[in-house]
Figure 1: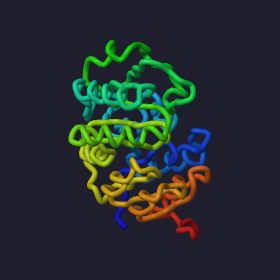
Figure 2: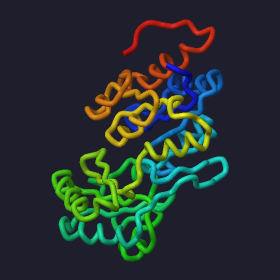
Figure 3: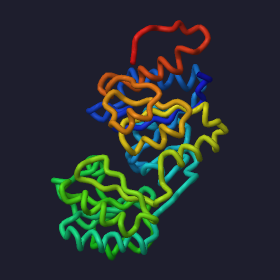
Length: 280
């Protein structure tokens, strides 16, 4: 295994524990990876920039940030947008019309860069973002769905969303991709969006070759990123699809599994580091 120069790491279910925190163990190993091993640490999440930012600041990062499953890549230090692949307003409006016809009670939200718009809120169906911040606007869809959107979100009963996703893809499979990481939520992005494409753009920006990239993830939206990276690490709590593409499997996210993988696969190979046994 060659030296790793870039580490891409998912947040929820990977770096974050069940309390949605980065433990001091994980923070310490990431600081060591940056300062001792010279590794670029990149956060790659389905979240918007504003709810990734606290972890980015906690870890004192200076790298581009992959948001919305790769629909947006921003450079926080400069505010520069490196990549943005939104859904055209015409397509987004068509999807909302179809969704409301198939499932009239479905909740509709949209993220546009780092702003959140919705037509109503329901405490029964809450995203991770909604637990942390309030929407920028609550108003009828026609008032805010006037331009392209970074990500469209549909929330409702899990038993209804499966059929709804199938209906949307039947009509718009060339225009959008749908990610379902939670039973009550469909995340809809442009068809060309993936964490893999975003990571490739970031690696190019930082001048890092593919075989020098390590990625860690747990959910189906991480699969393409893991396949693209030179080294793929699955969490112990990972989905079947993630486990199937992993080169290594580490411990659960509540047992600092990501930190353990970084220590074993990056830090132990450094000069002066004594190799330890153990791990998965």
